[in-house]
Image (cartoon, rainbow, N blue to C red):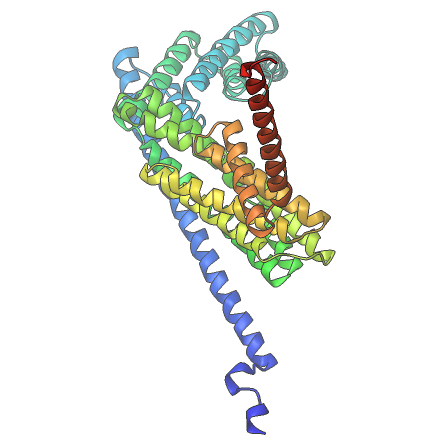
Length: 434
């Protein structure tokens, strides 16, 4: 009788199960809060760098304007320097041109209309409206050109009647400030482009790998709600992707313009190639989460190899991040990706239904995209995924060989018959005629 009783350590009460789930939830919340804190710290560091650059540029622009342009307030020079740095991260050369073009456009429109209409409140409103409308027609969108055109038009309409000769100092102040801003970010205080990329890409990598792991756990536990939660988390990564794209643009600007960072060009191109595919990987990860939830809701079979393939994809993305940071070759990332495709092929051979089949297709597409992130040609990436998935299918469901062996035997027999026929013909030719 005692042997028929279950062991005490295998029995878990409902309270124990609830406690275990609560412990896992608390650990997950701590991990996610720690990641969020690290992301905020990275953003704070970038903010401090931009603030120091802006302060240095403002001081140098004010000093240079006083020394070269004569006495006066010269408020436009530091304002243009700060505007060049703080509002044009990654596109400072183009934004500087827009700033100067906006100043010139505002001066022309403001002077012409002030000469025709005269000073006054309604004249100021009309001048500003026409200046902004013209700038929008020229630029096609908002930006530095539109803002500077409107601001310069306000100054010309309101201050020019009181302070004549404001136009030329305004242009030179803007030019000095813009040039000083570019000088600071490219020569005096250039940022480390790879450090910026590491910090900007970290939250995207963390969200992608973490939620792929969550999808794998949801498939293992057959928890459709967990897959839906992972999908919602992946949908909230768009602001991080935007910051990563800005960081890529800023890093490209630095390695292009700053001589002190020219030696980072090869590393930047390598990192940019890997990080540029993260946005598409996020789309495929969302498709995986959505397909997993649908397959579970329809109670379709989930082979054990399928969640393993998703988890292996998460490991490959983590390895991609490490390779980007360390500059190692991509072989380990490619190996893990091929293993994910192999497991996907095994899952298909083990048996899935319609939604599971679509899920495997999305998984193989994500594998191909990840291989492209390592520098593979699209055709080569697709070929590698097909070969790995085919090997996985063959390992579970080997192709029949009997027909091939029979065909070989038939071929060999026919070949033997042809040899015997040729020998008979040869003997007939050489035999004496009677």
